[in-house]
Picture 1 (tube, helix red, strand yellow):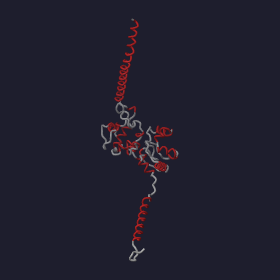
Picture 2 (cartoon, helix red, strand yellow):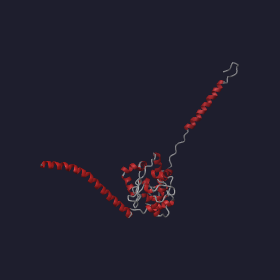
Picture 3 (cartoon, helix red, strand yellow):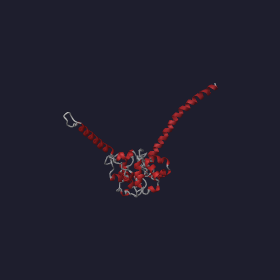
Length: 286
């Protein structure tokens, strides 16, 4: 195509260049948008730590709060492990093996960690790989049971400002009724079955409530040792005589209150029934 002056027109060339630039830009954008790298499979070892499994279990290091998981893939089927890791709370309501494990390990239930299917699969692969974790190397120094009791009831505050234990937990020998009931009774809890179990759990609590409370107010090593020294010695037979007396007095007072209430209630009813009967009887005799 030529212009009126007889020279080639530059308009088609400009259009062609513009189209070429547009196509190049579209190609670059498309390459960036759709060139998404394939998703990497979750790391089973990292999940074992980040999800809090390491607080209750070892792999080849012995039992803690829960069982040693070495060789678990040879004892349990993949299907069973998948169900257990996905919804342990549901398994505990229906599966005899899960219920037996709960009873064996001091009735400390496995929490539902909200694992995704690929995370469950990665954990099973990791557990079946023969890896080991040395949780049993964690231990506690010698603790003072008197200080531990003071920490538990709140007579002595934790260094990092954490709440006193009795607000959520009970233990034999503390108060008339033992303490709070938001958390489990720690008298015979699996969390205090050994210093290693206690230290690993308190170092990284795996339950939602404990994790939220202690994440920003962790216990010092000595505070853990003192608490363990107290809790490990607390048994039902060690209730203080004053606590038993308080329980007995509360029981007597409660029974007396019920008797008085019964007398008031039934006395009114009896009078209401007897008075008309007596009046009818007297009227009949006249």
